[in-house]
Every structure is written in structure tokens, then in C-alpha cells.
Length: 143
Image (cartoon, rainbow, N blue to C red; front, top):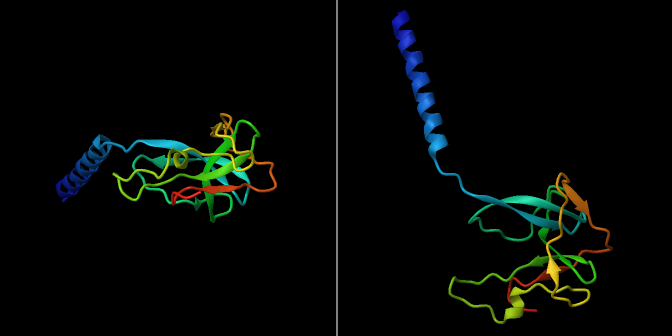
């Protein structure tokens, strides 16, 4: 009887070890961070995205629990932080209507000098000190 119990325990340990080895050997999908701005909570934060993942904006914000987060951009000229929804082609072969569709433009001053707002290392989010955060929606390919 003791031998049967010992054999069952040994088989379970071997199966668990094999499962662990197989899981570790499987390739992991690469991830990257994207800076988002919550237009309701007025915070810029980073979210981890899996490569190849399709994202439909707005996404759920950890600050409001609602779909109020968009890709964050900041104008180098006037400092305005704004949400930018990029143009998305309907098919892989479709070209955008014009090059300006692909380039974010500041909704306040019209500048094309745009950067992603930096979040200092070790900081979870940054507050946006603006009355409102404009949303520039180019997803449909219209201005």
C-alpha cells in the first residue's frame, strides 16, 4: 500500500515538473509601455501592451475605472498635453488620405512639434494641470 501511494506521489511530482518545464520553454510575447492620458482624471500614466494586441481607444483607466484613457502627446511649443487617436487603415493595403493624418498636431497652437510626455522614473503618474484635455481623433481619417 505504501508503495502505491509513493508511486502516485512520484508521478504527480514528475507531471508537475514537466508542466513547469514546458511552460518556461514556451516563448513569451514581447510587451512595451505606452503613455496614456486619462482625460477625466487628468493624469498621464504608462500602461503595458502586448505586441500585436489591437487597441480600441479609449481604454479603461485605472483612475476612473471608465474608458477615458487615450495615447498622450505634448506640444513642445505651448506645452499642451492632449489625447491623440491615430489614423487606423481599414486594411493593410489602404493608404491614409494625406500625410498630415499620420502626424499629430497641437489642438491649441497648431504646432507639429509633438512629443510623448515623459513620466520620471520611479513615478507612477503625472498630473495634468489644464482646464481640459483636448482629444484629437484622427481614427476615421478626417480633420
